Image (cartoon, rainbow, N blue to C red; front, side, top):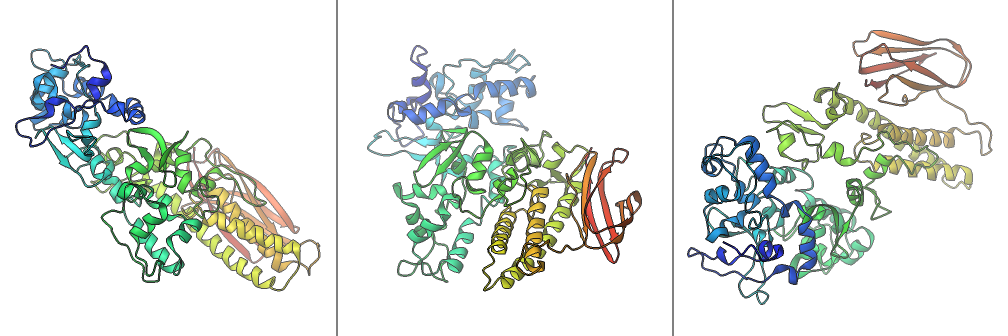
Length: 570
């Protein structure tokens, strides 16, 4: 048994002489890792990797009461706790099997776990220490450690290809196919886990032919977001060198024939892009320029590094900014869901056991997850309890359809305004066009087709349409009132409960009829039915007596007719 009088850092950090067994052909270092790797040790001590025994004890008491230790390791429904929560624990007490370790480190009564089972010999439990993931040779530091997972069933190290493969041994099904921890499986299915190298090489071939890797990094740093940890290859390289390593060049420049290379080295947006491996619970961003982790206060900030302008102010990936609802030129700030972070929707973890929505641990980053039985889980339903996945999907489709329609109109209008102002020196209209172009770029930078902050995005597109219409339809070049067209605007707020405002405009005296319908086409309210003079108008709709759901509102003014949808959520 290890000497319990030795300091705790010694017990958890030394690679343990007893890992050397007759079945092994190698020896292990007995150095104290913390003496040279103090920073990494400090991080590790704060992580859940350094506190695994109580989790196991709690699960044994809750789910394994009445069963013996060997059932956990070898039984029909075995969940090998030792293998992932404390692999090197088999070296304690002079060396043990996994089953013996389960009996040694967790209390039993008459050889069975009970609801009172608790941790034992806590000073000897190694947690997930350095040597769980690092094979440290006996002549270290002359020879360097390698990435490897200590395999407790075989008492051997298994080499791994890269960090995700290492993480996936316990946080995926690489080692145990029936594992309910499937974060790596989800990651491999996500855009973070595949396709990044093809995307970058395609963009370099299309837009950067004739440019060097240094020129690309100076203008549009692909590596920083698409594969930040690639700079750790070959004992450390620059971002430009990483780009050159991963995409082919000719005479030092990218060409239209540039394609991926060294694909086995490309790390994608791997685990360690967002997790400091020595304290994965700390919200961290790996900065490929400094090769250091930046600790962040919120997950929102982490997402905003690449899906917003928090690192690169001139980026066109602006989902973070749209969610914040700020930055539009002449458009009021609007945050639809204050306090809700990207991860609340994109990394929602279901509390229903054994579902993909639970086992994926949020690492698919999709709001919709297809379950094995063919049903779908939707993160929307965790807050909007009156919805199911199907109605959530219909709502999002409706938002995206409205966005697509307005985006098309906005692009046509901007092109018309650019043509209209060719050769013009009208500073007022030129500024209007610049504002419209900025707002259009902001709306399109959302990259969710208007879902992340629907009302704000629609406001941006309507502003683009209004300003470009003003440019083309204005009276000469003076400041006279600009002619208006018939228009029905999106209600605000939307979704709403129970009241919302509907804005509309008419350019001439007209008979106006504005009605509300349910999805079956049944009229549920008649808001306006009268002759009105030209102007801008607002009307309030109160749905306190109506059930949650999608409703349609339709305006008929002279020959003008338009229909829009809105969502009542109670």
